Length: 505
Image (tube, rainbow, N blue to C red; front, side, top):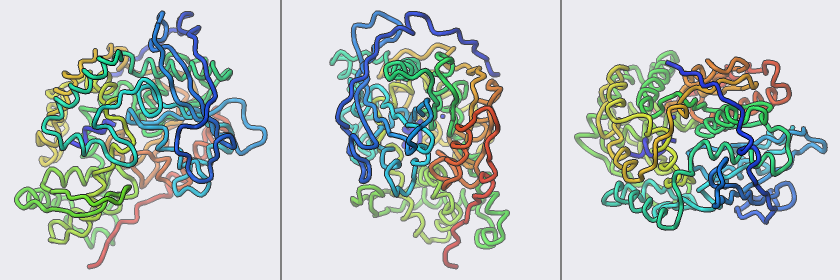
């Protein structure tokens, strides 16, 4: 199902040794080049943004005869005398393409990352295997330009066969899929640091990117001045087994917030119980939505049954600006008013837009699905007593995912790759109150072995709280990076409550 396609997240403390001399002396070379990305208006190649490629060993710490070519974009600080350490931004997915975040650095962007440039340069490193990096793990059904590859994949007769054929084709090209995991990506980050001549770097990781940050902190601690984990994914969290539980808990918090607001409670007095009624209604009488793709504007048709309705509800919980519509979405279906449903359904098309599904599955089959199985998912869901409608095999089981991983055939990560990272590096942990996939409890979990960490939960937002909290999240990050040894100003995190959409009576 679409939700599990985007996974896209007792504590065992791992005491990491310093990187070996062999790893530290890996050869890596950075070569400037014209930006291969489509730069948004306001960003000019050579003026504020420069690009290039990092050539790095395919397997760090070994006598690797093969190399990876990784695309890099460096955005210049708006200061004439910026801080000596750059901020390296690591994106999510896994498999999110660098090109997807560049518009956020353009002047006047609706969602702006430009405040990150007010202290230091920002460096974007494309993960190995995706986008403009080589070799590419793109499958035939992976696309670019705003099209959600998962929709193409799900239209095939057998997604398991499609991924198996993709993996076979990649190996036939001489690509060793074992080279694509967080260990190697973290070593790429440190190789980039050395190739660019920096003594230390600051790190900011979003969602899966936070797992990469933690791995760099573990494997290359002397290289990191400070770290920011946004929508944190600690290595020890079983994100696959916890995904439905996180969604259920997010719904609990969101619907409780509605009940605590007089206007929302008056308009939607029984919205929690109405959820089950909405699923039953659409299971019995599926509804076809005709709408436009939120990015491309192309027409889409979606047959909404009970399971697809839960996917729409998940997307509305996952994407922060859509949170306000959740009570109206649920109640509208029960009342026979599908206006909100028709508005939100097309957003199910965009969860994996800009994400390489080939890379996403290769890495997740190694690190996330490799540490669990369908039985663990079912047991966790039963133990947590989640809503009955979320327990269905179609929604909660990820029925295709484990067969897909079997077909791809990568070796599951060693147990140490799913053990907590212990570090005294100053760390800021930022969660969204309603995040259904990397919930605030993951921030608490990560902090258990990060004694110099600060936890911030931003009210009224969900996944990727930095992008969806106005200026608040980035202001907290900026204050932290100015002096990571002191607690940042976080009062704005309590000032962003949801204004629920009530609609017409």
